[in-house]
Image (cartoon, rainbow, N blue to C red):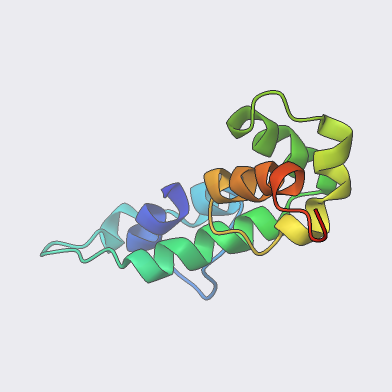
Length: 105
């Protein structure tokens, strides 16, 4: 969400930016003066890109917060499969599914 809102007042190419890039490129003069439309599809795309860019351990650490009782080592092992999730909650749902959605049971 921060990345999407910051894009309203940044210059240059690119959508997915780190916190330091957002701070460096913020330009108060570029703030929109009229109505701002925040597209849910763009927010989801940015969220997915940010999650995909996290190292496996960091991704697992954040997902575990949304999946209480999950084994962090298992979540880390699942990190490649979680990279397409749009949100941490969605990634946590996928982790929960591992225990309940096995084929052949």
